[in-house]
Length: 73
Image (cartoon, rainbow, N blue to C red; front, top):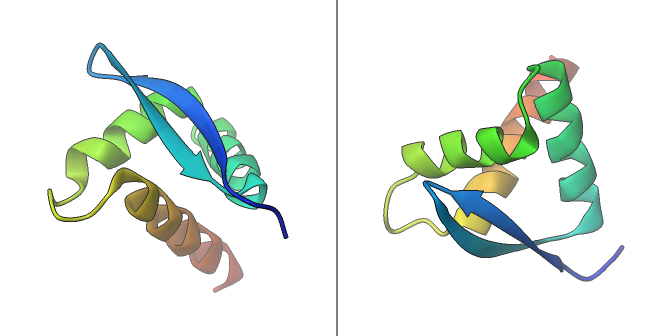
């Protein structure tokens, strides 16, 4: 287990910070690699689809969880 790590990303031309645990950052990079897109582009796509009441970190965790569960099915 690790505490969340804050990283800066650019979404829609503006910088923002996102805090995720190392395991989520690693998996996010693997998903982006498998989809042949930069991690920043994947984060931007997830951000664009999330409802306004759901924070970006939560949306990323839920997306990553869904992708991992798909692989296990």
